[in-house]
Length: 249
Figure 1 (cartoon, rainbow, N blue to C red):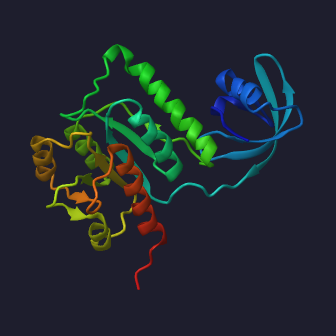
Figure 2 (cartoon, rainbow, N blue to C red):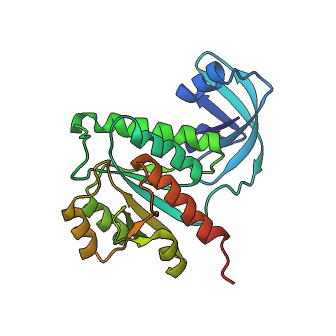
Figure 3 (cartoon, helix red, strand yellow):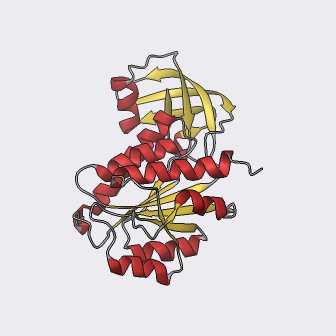
C-alpha cells in the first residue's frame, strides 16, 4: 500500500493522512490500525510506516524508517500529447506514468477536436494531476509526474528549447525517419527528452513546417499507424529501453 502525501503532512516521526488519501485508505483499501504502508513526499523521500490511528477524517502513521527506492528512469521524458476525443489524454496520463514519463503537456493542435474552456481548465488540470498521482502510487513511482497547462505545438517547441530537451515530432509520414534509426544515430541525451504526439487527424502542414523551422526531426514508428493514445506509450518504452538498457558493441 503506497500513498503520496505533501511534505507538510510529515511531522517528526509521524505523518497525517487526510482528505482523498484518507478516503482511499479507509474506503478503498480497507486499512486497519497496525497495517504497514509506504509513504512518499514527492521530493525523493520514502518511508516504511505503520498506521497507529484511524479516525473519521484523518489517520496517523508512525514513520518506522526511511527506505531507498530506485523506480525513476535516469532519463526525464516529457510527452506533449494532442488532446483527443473522450478519455484519450487520461489514458496516456495513466499508462504513461506507469511506463516512466516525467512530464505531460496537453497540446492544442490545429486538428484537435477538443477545446477546454478557460473556466474549466483549473478543474481539468486538477483531475489530470490526481490521475497521475494514482498511477504513480499503483506503479511504484518515487515521484508524481507533472501535468502542465495546454500549449500549442510552437509553444511546446519553445518550452523544449528552454528545458534543453532533445525533442522529436511523431508522425506516420513516409518521409519521416524511423525511431529505431533516430535512436541508433543519436547521442545519449544528458538530461531530458521530449516527444510530440498528434491528434486523430494528424498534424497540419503548418505544424509540420513549424517543426522543420525549429530544425527538429520528424520520426515514425514503422509501417503500421498507431492510435494517438498508443503512440506515446510505444515511443517512451523504446526510448527508455534504448538509453537505459542498450549498450553498443
